[in-house]
Length: 133
Image (cartoon, rainbow, N blue to C red; front, top):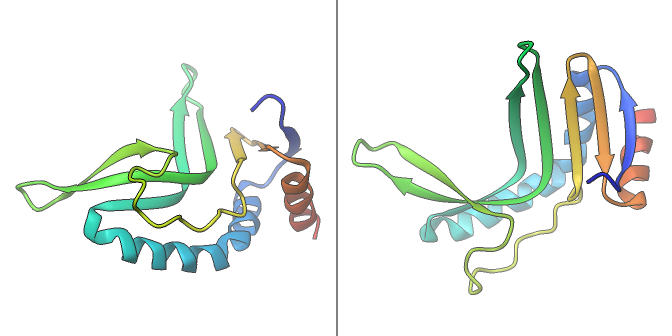
């Protein structure tokens, strides 16, 4: 993603809240889609969150916006196990998922610094306008 457009700012919670507002309509579509594919034991997540810990103890949190596929397996204990499948639709005969309006967006939180990396100028401008308002 080094070729993306970068926006640096501070105020993690407010930024994430504003970005998630852009997802609100899309989430309804995702819930409906996941209900439709549930009998096949697949699940689609719009955001993948990764937390890495530096040797200094500082946590770096990454929010990857896109389409992330999981398979749900029920264990003998009754608990559900989520197995990451990837970014591609696992079965060709599954219906096409709704498009994530924030696909290609990465938010990196390193201590008090927040970095937003957008894969396209259009996405960058959309995020910038929301954060500037």
